[in-house]
Length: 228
Image 1: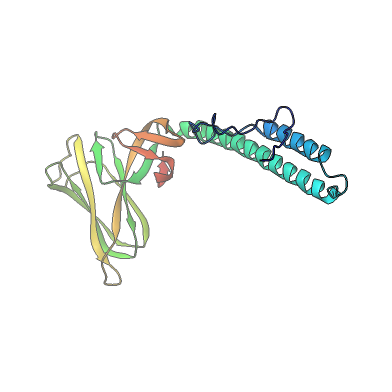
Image 2: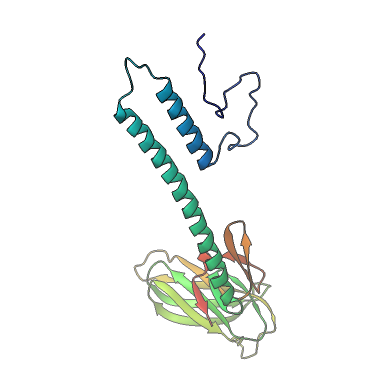
């Protein structure tokens, strides 16, 4: 069996001493370590080449080019990671400014405390005779608001707690449901939206998380619209 004399400082693989890595990066070195070892290997190759058949300059140029490419990718990756960290920090600071504002998100339940509540609907197609039904926690309809003909997209309304019998709704949890007919005669696809005040902003891993006054936690991308 032939023996390869490695230059000083370049570790050799020893089957007896080899161990299973404890993590995916157990055998990974820094970009500087890889660069230093590469240069040592290159010098060893030059010193031990066959003088009767020396390596062509283009071969060394190709290897150096590969080294530069590898180092460039490593540096680029480090710069991108630093840039992404700055963006995440900036997003977090920017999102903290919405504490106290109302976020309109998908949902059907809301807490009425005596203050007007903004609710809405997302329509997949035009609707005729769109109606919003407000129900209490027993499932009883306490109010019904007609929105008439509505175009596809988003429709909104503000419920002030007035009930269809002329009274005022007591504080508590309510549910919103939209009903109507599609203008084209097909089935109407509609989803409800409910606004709630933002009480805090935090992180769930790398994702930003918004906590609402009604107890829900949503992502920043789940917010349909920011309200005052």
